[in-house]
Every structure is written in C-alpha cells, then in structure tokens.
Length: 183
Image (cartoon, rainbow, N blue to C red):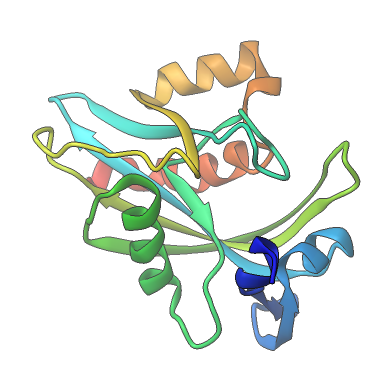
C-alpha cells in the first residue's frame, strides 16, 4: 500500500444557490469540476490597542493559490459538521489557536485558477478574537507565514499588489468590515 492509499479522501458538502445541502463530492473533484460547495473564511482579530487581523500566507505546495496571502484560515466543513465547529477545528489544525467564533453569514463566489482548478463556493465568513498575549503556532503543512495587519494596511496592499492575495479575500473582507466597530 502506498502513502497516498493510506490518506483518506476529503469530501466537501455540495450546496444549491441558497446553501442547502444537495450531496457530497471528493474535494479535488469539486475543484476540478467547479461544483458549488460550502466553505468558510475565518478572520481572527486582536486589539493592541489598534484592531489588527491575522493573515496567513498559504503553504507553497497548496494545489491552488500557493504562497498567496489570505484571511486567517479557510476550509470546508465535513459532512455533519457545523461551519463553526469546522472553523474551530481548522484554526487549531492550521494555527494552534482557539477562539470563540461567530458566523456573520455568507456570500457566493467563483474563481478560476491557472492550473485549471476553481473555487465555486458559498463562503461563510466567521470572526473571532485573540488576546495580544496569545501566540500562534502555524502548521507548516498548511501555512508558510503569518502576520498581523490593520484593515487599512491590508486594503492598501490589496490595491497596490492584488496578485499577492487570494481571489476571495477582497469580498470576504468587505463582508467583515461593517462588523469591525462591534469588536
């Protein structure tokens, strides 16, 4: 048995335009065939006293968007797993942190990549907060680098060098901005 045969397939939840579950698909197949599926994007904030967001640079070996900067973490819930439970799981797996999370709702987007894959997702936007004393322990299998930035700093960078960021980040950030004042 090879190493790849030992790794179980990951599945994503297929959804309709209203985020109702309609089935499952193997993750790579969903990205090859541009199947609409459920995902989430987590934004973790801290106050130092300025409000900063934790960004991650995707691992350089990711099958799409390698090396691009994005929100704190993002992934897909598993069958029978809520968005918040999945977001908590992935925060721990990718960055070694836990936080109380809140689902702000979702948006739909479709992005195609040069390697022929695509993201066609109902993306739930999730926020949480860390204290300045909490440390982050990035998993190198998932994350190449991390950094804290303010929203204005991030927006400036996204304007001057949009190619350095994932295609969903701008839309997800726009979704988060009205909630910043409540943090």
